[in-house]
Image 1 (cartoon, rainbow, N blue to C red):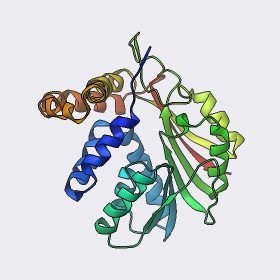
Image 2: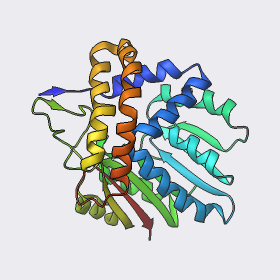
Image 3: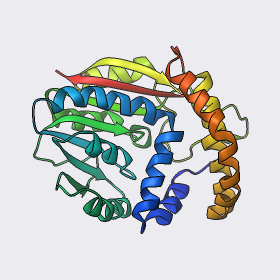
Image 4: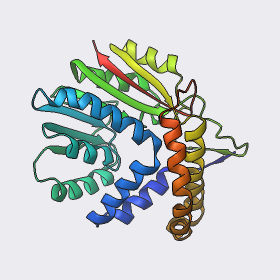
Length: 274
């Protein structure tokens, strides 16, 4: 069974946008446009952040920040937030530092190299986001407990991951993605793990249902296969491909966002520290 590698493609794209603030802003826009999970999560962050932000300065931890696109959204959305953004990839952190140093005038964000299995942070947080990270870590329960320990009482933890239904993406000869430690989570499984760590789930919802999964296949999976095979040369045909499939992708994502789903290839949960 062929493993389609996601991380090497991410690394190549990171190099492409590394030295250009304009390209990086465009890159963030495209990530938010095509990845359905971003539609769900930015809506939840906005809802919870509005409540927290109204009381004054507050602290957010981005546990596994990657490219930093959610940090960019949060800093522009909220005036009173201070962000601690951590990752195990030093290259991503250095790129983020260079970009945010020039992009954000206020010193409202810091980037630190950190392992979620061995966290040693002194401050407590009002909101922690952990987006498409837990599926990469074998001892996910320890990570969830570590993050719960960093939350203030009444603070919120937001996670997203592939679901347990994402092992086979409808293709008998391909598995997406090869870097994962597990397939993903069912609703019952992730809620049980959260409650063990003193996190009470408020909403757990599947994402990438029937329509969202189709949008993901045409807008993410097929292009990833192309970039895996041809490296950044694959971007050339994609310049012609995306304008064609963009309207279809947006319609499918809208349909998935507002459609009640009993199952899906992704899952998120927002939980409160008790």
